[in-house]
Length: 345
Image 1 (spheres, rainbow, N blue to C red):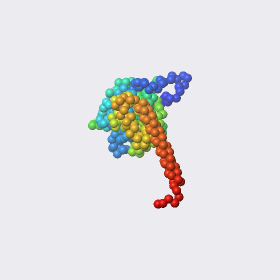
Image 2 (image 1 turned 60 degrees about the horizontal axis):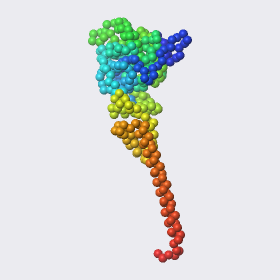
Image 3 (image 1 turned 180 degrees about the vertical axis):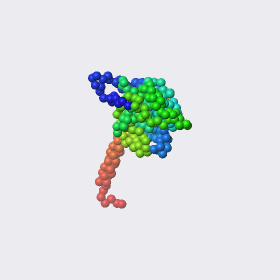
Image 4 (image 1 turned 90 degrees about the vertical axis):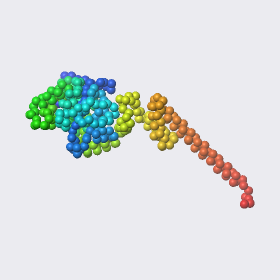
């Protein structure tokens, strides 16, 4: 494998600059193959793509990252998916089933037609759409870009390749394999991914935790803890809740949760009215949006103003009550002072 300069490093004066990473509205121009047919021996044979991290399956999280892919092919046994995007992938099987990642790549490539293809393991809980955009900016002269994790390990199953180059590499590996034993499947069955790399010229992209995979239960525990501790926990929770409630961007494209506005409205209701008013308020905002077409920001603004008025009225009431009690006490004292001493009981 020939390693190229990191595409995020500025080119030298005599080196052509690679294409800039696409912006939010860019059609990334790649298909995706997600490998979900492994035996997960280090997880005791558990169905790893179905393991949940942050309330969503590992496979569902990877499919979310593929939101901008032209076509998404999942290689492995058909199973339920829960992508927040609401996207339904195409399914394929490697030959033979369980024949390993290279056989899975070959099976997936039969269903793609774009010049670039993302090849992804199904156990990448922190892979993002933005990272795939960066990977899709394959520089001239390279056959692909692969991620490098926080420990410096290259991840060939977290990469974007030129489709034609990957097909040539598969053909070269297949041609170099000896005939498989009877019943063992085709020449790519059981072949390790590293056998492809000498046939490809690849660059790498340092992605840190975006490239983290989950091979063991310890890895999964670490991923779950990270989601609970980092600053994106609310975004993770919203995505998981949307999946659970069947509210996917593909079916509800206009629903963009304004976390700040909703939390501010809930806070104002809790402070101005009572703490239990906070969750009830957010429910009513959602109900008003659904039934009456009120925008989220407008609904939150109205509720915030109502909570402020409610709070002012409550404070005014408390002040008036305190003044009234003070007057009553003063009157009682005056009456007590005017009573003749020695009055008959």
